[in-house]
Image (cartoon, rainbow, N blue to C red; front, side, top):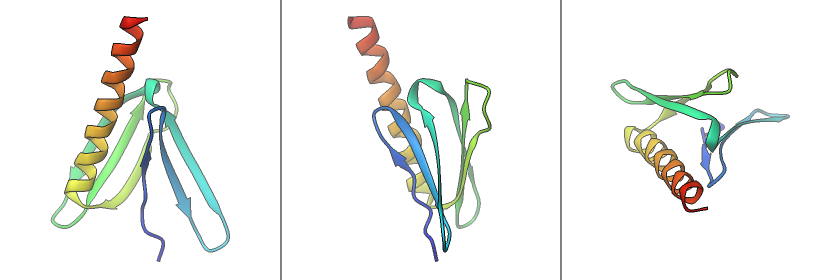
Length: 89
């Protein structure tokens, strides 16, 4: 009923969890992401994004394998761009 959606921006990964009457939004700053773990089953993939800040990981279920890998790739690209900016400043 409520599809799983993950938003990857330059600054954060955002996971809105929707229900009938509410929306709970979880986010992790791109600079605080330590790792992205993908567990792939026969049909769906699960994502777990670990934080270096010690908070609970962001966990999301029910993604296609391609979508899960795309999230991981976007996180890696955003972190690389951020690292280049810090070195250039």
